[in-house]
Image 1 (cartoon, rainbow, N blue to C red):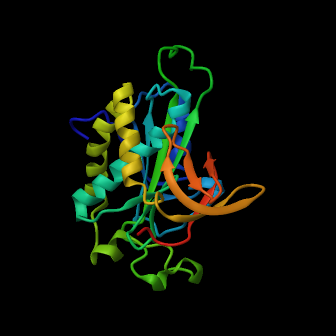
Image 2: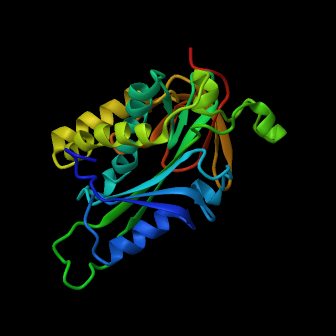
Length: 262
């Protein structure tokens, strides 16, 4: 994308995983800014090993290779800036505003999921000859652009849960235009990750866009679950939930919105 660090865009008809591809490229010394885009992923995945199948060529499936040099407690900002940039890209392309559900989903105002994000870091020893580069973080995003066209394409358990941009705006959406708008929005946000002030700005933007804040939630952890009201996202990207007799901070877990934000 001209004017950005994202000039090396590699397109695939079919690939197992754009994240896996870029992690391999990163280990071989690839520079920040490589983008992998696929018409179809045969082994695409989300958080907790979840998968999402869509017809080839219908949606935007992309990953970006970042080397932001973030402090360990702020690596979450790599996925946050991609989420924020996707929101901007959608707004610029079709004039529709999405929100962020903690930790990594993009939702329509009615709560239906439109996109998911998965960040994976390679913190292994640098490849010989590349000891001067920062560790790689690959951030993948899958956006429901033109599929499903309507609810009849979805299994019953996803009706009312997932939606595409096409459904939301009433017509087809250009995936190439959307990717370009997203990468243009991502450039200044990635640049911000290089300074403490910039990181604070991106963390504040995440909190502003996070529709989980102010929402009644159910948090599902490996060994327990609890309910409360999400009240904040910390500087480290953790979710703070008011459980009535105090607060609990969620570092990682499944969060379900119990009711819409008011």
